[in-house]
Every structure is written in structure tokens, then in C-alpha cells.
Image (cartoon, rainbow, N blue to C red; front, side, top):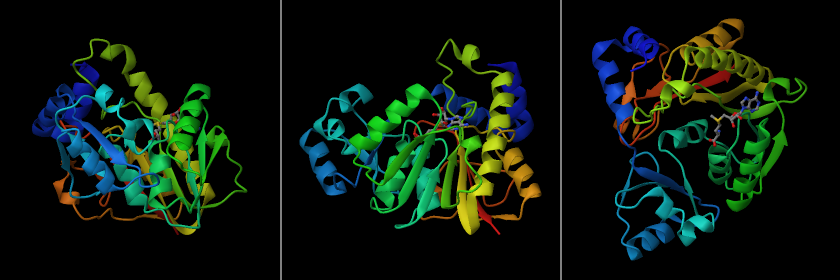
Amino acid sequence: MLEFLNEMLQKQYGEEIKGKIIDGYKTNRLVTFRVNTLKSSIKEIEEKLEELNIEYKKVSWSKEAFIINNVRENEIQELDIYLQGKIYLQSLSSMLPPIILEPKEGIDILDMAAAPGGKTTQLAALSNNKAHITACEMNNIRIEKLKYNVEKQGASCVYVMKKDSRQIDDFFSFDQILLDAPCSGSGILNFNNKNLNKHFSLELIDKSAKIQLALLRKAIKVLKKNQEMVYSTCSILSKENEEIVSKVMSENKLEIVPIEFEGIDDLPLLPTKIKGTLCVCPNELYEGFFIAKIRKL
Ligand code: SAM
């Protein structure tokens, strides 16, 4: 166990919850995917899985989300439904931010950290390909994955832009924004990985927090008044979550929109320091994830 992480989790959550989080880090998560309703239907995918004897479970909060019991990820990747872009392999927690944003048809949406495009293409599907989505990504290799996935998923309402989102011109304005920020990944650590301490460090947490703050400040600038955005990370550390949100709240006229949806009580939730925000505990089904919905006043 990394000593600095142990101390941070102990301080933030206490002994009992820290234990649950660590158990979550040790489990291997089940394969999950989302049906891409731009290319298929839930019925078609259910019928296909039954035909192939692939066992699945559903969740209470999304009809499109599937949990697979008896098949590994690489086997799913060989199926026609995968190759044709009818399903998208995505963790359950990662499906939550677009659902919480509730993208609308006909409006301008900015996805500020978009690659590889799981949430971008989900936003496109949730808005029936009728929103105008600008998907920004600054990494050269990852932007190619984003373009590939946008094309494969038939997300024709998405415009991919190579850009450091911190540099987006203040002249632009958007009706809805998703900032699924780069982070330390403290919610998705795998304790079975022997190289863990090579990737995960205090420096990474500090560096992530700086970028997150700059990105969230920009998001608030280019969000239209009286409109909403979602800030999310796959970190469960307050330094990358509540502290970033609180800082930007203290600098602007904003309010937290309490996150509520059918099935929220079925999620393994962690306590958060800002009422109305959501933090998911890592376990065999869910990755650790933080989500805040913010309205600009
Ligand atoms: N939203 C993505 C999805 O659901 O597939 C995952 C996004 S991942 C957490 C964060 C992404 O932000 C990475 O691809 C990273 O390259 C990109 N990124 C980091 N800093 C950025 C910046 N300043 N501007 C634009 N993209 C950035």
C-alpha cells in the first residue's frame, strides 16, 4: 500500500471506508458496455447476447448499460455487435456524467477532455445525434482514437477539435459543458498491478489538480449564464474534486445542482464534502468516480 495514499484516504474517509476502498482496488471489475442507440437497440443486443449464450445483468439507472458475467473483454471485442459500433465498452461509473448532464437536442455542447470518446459518443446518443457537440482533445495519439470512435459509433453531430481546452477563446459560449478532467486515477487503481507506484504519485495528484483548476475556470467562462455543466474525475481524492469545485465556486456566481436520478440509491456511494455532489466507491462493478453538476448564475 502506498503510504501517502493510505494517509490521504484515512484523513478523508476514516478507517472503515478506507478499508472498503482498498478492497475495491483489489477486485477485478466485470466487463460492462453501453448499447449505442445510434446504431442499434436494447432489444437487438439482448437477443444477440441470448443467442450467443452470453449472460448479462442490467442496472436500475440506465437501460443501455449491460454487465457481462461469463465472457472476457477480448471476447466481446471479437463480436459483430462490437465491430459494427453497436456497443461501446465502458465502465458503469463512466456512463454517469453524460446521464447527469442530460444533453438536449439542438444546443451547443462542449466536451473539454474528450478522448477516447466514451462520453462524447454517449452524449451524441443521448441527444439523438441532434446536439452540436464540440469535442476537444490535446493529445495527438488520443485524438486519433477519439476520431475513430466518433466515426465508428456514428456520432455525426460531433465536431472533433485538437485544442488545449485551457486555451479556448472566451469569445465562445456553450449551453452545456462536460469536463471529464484528466486526473490521478485514484478511483481506478489496481492493486494487482506491480508497477502501480511508477504511475501513481503525489506529484501526479498535484499536477492533475493544477490542470483541473485551469480547465474548470475556463469551463465556467465559456458556459452561458443560467446553464449547467458537469465536472467529473475518476479520482476519489478531495484535492482533485471538492477542493477544485469549491475554489471555482468561491470565485464565481455558481450553484451546485443536486444530483438526483432514478436508481442513484443502488450505487456504492462515498461521502462527499459538497452536498449534492456524488462520489462512487470502487468495487467489482464500479470504478471510483466523482461528479458535480454546476449551474452558472
Ligand atoms: N472523456 C473521456 C472519455 O469518456 O472517453 C476520457 C477523458 S480522460 C479522463 C482526460 C482526457 O483529457 C485525456 O485524453 C487527456 O489527453 C485530455 N486532456 C488533458 N489535458 C487537456 C487539455 N488541457 N485540453 C484538452 N484535453 C486535455
